[in-house]
Length: 110
Length: 112
Image (cartoon, rainbow over all chains, first blue to last red; front, side, top):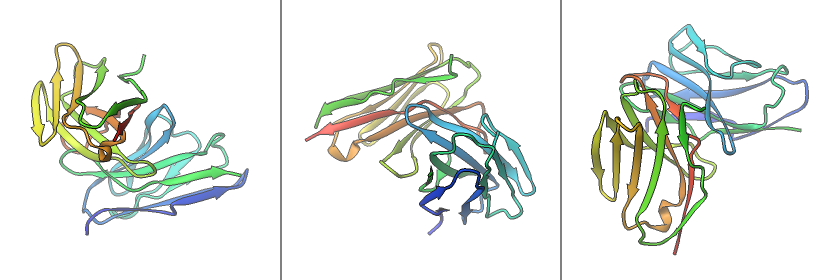
């Protein structure tokens, strides 16, 4: 079955820690995206990549970093510089139209 | 002002009702319009995809785009409890792998 796999489903971070969220796709899509979802605010774009070894900042990139070393993988690191990281994080990929989303990772700061 | 505005609801209707969900937008260059459905604690799934103005029907769902008014709608006929979810509108300037701009999402509950 083709799709996007995000892991872990739930993640807890201590203050001052960096954490990395995994996103893997087997759809052979070139473009991949990371969104953050907060209640009442919809989806906000963090980073996106349209090709391997290239990525661009989205609307809320501060405190986040990404890499795109393989077509299938687009991990997101939430750094200690992100002051309010508690949110639902969604990874997506696209080819011709629309996005295919993963099931999300819920990150909580403890 | 947000680029895409969507009433967050919540919206609660009885089973069998016709539901109307709407979004307005400010960028007249948007050409492709989508509706996503998101169940609780899940990723959104693509429901409808339309290009430019006009209507598109798929079973109980109809998507409508009025570019002159910068207004899009999703109608759900004969609504079912399984339609209870958050509905997100999204749009982009061109086709292919492009950034989508999302509305805030409308939370819909269909009561049996």
